[in-house]
Length: 430
Ligand code: ADP
Image (cartoon, rainbow, N blue to C red; front, side, top):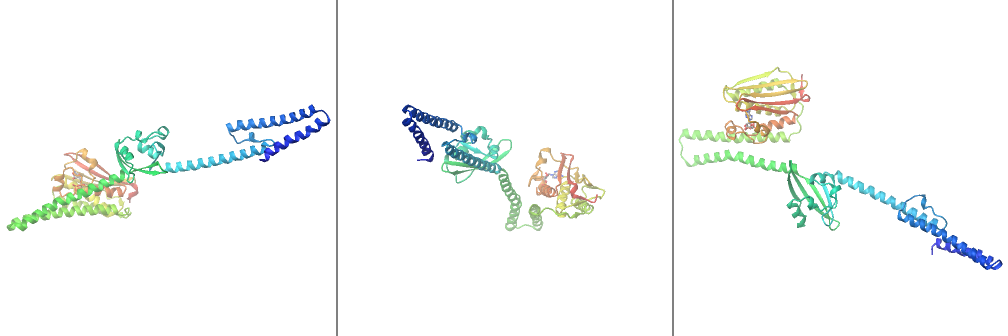
């Protein structure tokens, strides 16, 4: 029996003890009256506290309304402490949940939690963006009502989650998502969504590149093999032999230039950021002019426009390679009698190296793709001109490593202008 109950019983007993002498020595009715009045008062007190407890239990609060009286003091005190502890625990749990949600929101991967009926229980903002969901309105919705792609529905139904599912979206721009369902806590599922667009694009570029390289090298190799077979099988006179050998040498030179350009490209790609050595531009422009004249062999007018002021900070071999490619292209794509103009202008605001020609020009639709590896406007013409299709890719890469922009302007049949614009930080001596 609890102390409070004993206390209440003792009080009732004391009322009886107080009423007894009055009943014995005064009048029986007076004794009963005192006894009933005492018990009535005690009952009223207990009813009052009982109804307070009833009211409080319907809307528990932690405040002074829980201060009890008499035997009820202990009960209310314990309830007060219990309720306070409970509230502290709830606040702690809420804080922990908020921290877990904040961590889930900070993830760069999308996360969706599904219940046993594949209904959405939670998703972070990354998943909202990736799948076009909105937790506020989509909470409790079956995921298949919102992500309706048949591959996804089949993935959920197949129940084999050992591998992720790759989904391609073609809305405004191509996006590739890798979705992996991870079962947890029995029937529940965690959906992890990774945006693999970039990795997918790189993988495709790598495959295209390998295919392109193989194709580019196979063509001259096939020609070489054909000539070799002919030379082995057929008796040729000396003149014919010389003609065949010249054609074979042309093909092997072609392969050599492709390999050389590939090596240049890969060395630029894998090299550390270019050093800031000073590149003497007057010297470099002079060398470019001499190279252009040698390549042109007197078929073009080569003009240099430079006041000799200003130098560049960067890696000389990369800049030589970039500028050399622009000059060589201008000569190769300009018919005899045309002009190739090499210009250099430097100021404290920045510098521009440009090559302008009066050549065949390029249609506007090709311009954005010119710097792609192996992209040519006219494959046959490029091959005849000794091109590899890698020149402008090298140019773009070297320039971007020097924070420079390549600007291309061209009019078919009139000519082209390729300009490399360098920021002030790369210019010296002005
Ligand atoms: P290629 O080795 O074929 O010249 P590039 O990457 O240097 O490869 O150039 C890509 C393509 O851009 C060329 O095939 C050519 O069609 C076009 N091109 C580049 N420079 C010029 C230019 N000065 N005039 C006209 N077309 C050009």
